[in-house]
Image 1 (tube, rainbow, N blue to C red):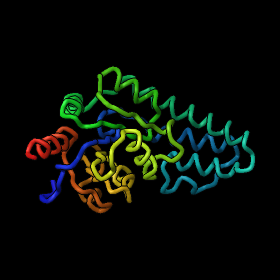
Image 2: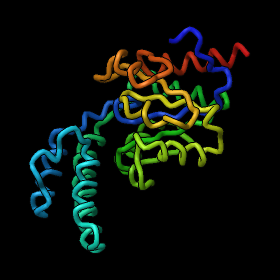
Image 3: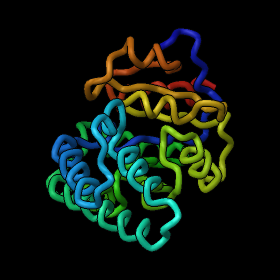
Length: 229
């Protein structure tokens, strides 16, 4: 943890889901292939379209090409959503939280913190895990609930509004650089966790305020800051 990081004013903790709270093992490579096939079936594909783009951005690129035909946009998006949900549900039914996560979220709740989950995943897949393992949260905001998903900060801002807290008293915790980028300009703190492929150096390069090994260690620091007030 950064030595001078002040967590004493934190009132709400918002988490990413996949790779942060739970090990889902979603086959993103397969998801990408299926979405590319979807665009090809609609005759919307162009070579290089997927370069440096997330799957949701590839879908948006296809949707943008249909601008002006509202009915086609709705059908194209509905079919894309069905593909994403199918791939996610295939793995979320057997997904499980990382060690100590259930207890960490419960501790936050019992200590008076608001707890949110902000994710690019679908609601059905996330809910299947949170309900099965009783992962405490006051708010779940998925891609099904917003127009602009993270790393667009609007996703985080809306979640904070729904939690009824101040971004300046909120921290976002995630395993990917998009979780840090998703609070840019909001005044919230961003913490990276090393539970997946993102390195400490990559988190620091995008402005993470601190980096921890995992969610339980990050939560322990937040709880310690509160108890030392």
